[in-house]
Length: 102
Image (cartoon, rainbow, N blue to C red; front, side, top):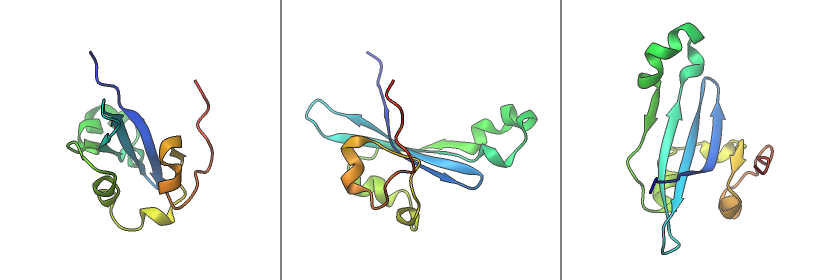
């Protein structure tokens, strides 16, 4: 069975973005990974060669507190591009817009 990761929090910065991905475990707890993408600094022509260098993924993070800490300082002053509905109460700034239902 394939592991499904959901977008939990998306922060866009000049030149890239940080996405906190989550997976709900059978016991109801969540685990997380942080993905970064800084490809916006480069031309499309460079993208194929640099994608592996500019996209990173953390190891699995086992608590919300650790996941938030992995974002570094200052993230809470940003308005997120998206917050998963189950985590809206835990994020200080509300998202700029809701992601459309699929």
